Length: 429
Image (cartoon, rainbow, N blue to C red; front, side):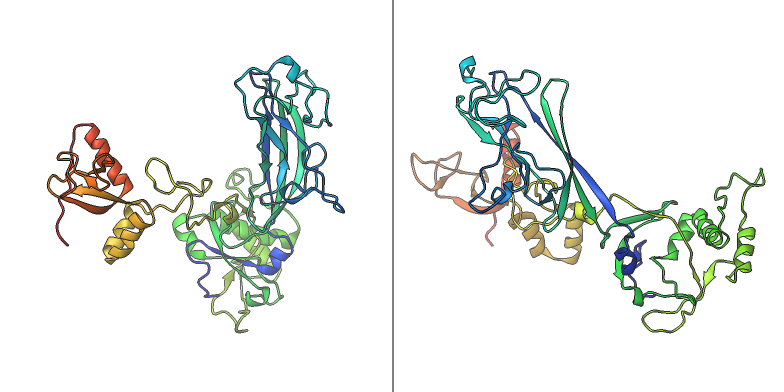
């Protein structure tokens, strides 16, 4: 093809094949919630949603999937942010609740009804709605990608070893292959999708057969995966003869192996090239390709590394309390770390302004007050003056303001706690 979309082990997929279901998968995620019993005779509970507005059949907003027991039904379509379990926990789990206040409230247990509902199976008391402190909501919602929809596949109510009620909800998400999803043959030739090409743009043979997947042959010399070449040759011969072929190297001693020569002979008998190559026509130009292409059936499998689970970006977000730097990790809505090697690249390019922006302005820039005489960081003395003062002379006369990363300021203070006193020497710009 010469497109460049299959470099570095990337593969090109046929869009028509994806439309027919190639590479489609179901991702199942289990969400479990434990209804704990606390030492003060209170317990977590699942409550029904508020009544729907007049003329509606469902609760409003995020609670629209919940049934009367507070749990989403099997088969409901759930989207990002939708609540599938309306759990509540007691606000006060320390103070003792008298027996008269337990079990008679207006709350409903898991699967229970209205006021005065019987305790759940197993004798666990229902916490009263008027217990000290009341309840606070702790709903379980689906944190899926925006714009995607999943289905509640299964709901299970059981108990764990501590006799606590456990509610498990299995959510099913159907996914179609997209750019960046990972595929692999059975020989470790893995690669991500570099392009999804329309079927008319892909090459085709003289019979009009168009490939489902295009792979770069430069992955063979260094990996030496000869088994994949034999699989393609043997599968192509097996399709023509209707019989299975022995695909391992352990059948030669017993005489049951299918050597490459026998497979090539089968291809020749059916009008194909002995080496498994075909003459293809370019789908975009209509001209025959200059080289014969090694083509045939190969077993491919989709791996669990999908872009939908890994894509992450943020502009602003939460910060760590101690260092005031952005949090780390996709699950915590963290920032993308500029490490030492990335810093070296920016230094090599001379992009000092970008380096300052990444390591300070977008991270933990902080203005510190430094004494120009002793080089120590000052502080605000509210008793004598509103201005910052030197820690040794208590005077605000020689103080200057300096932007620093907050983590750097924190390091200086931690060193001072160990009797190591760093001093900042300031020069006039």
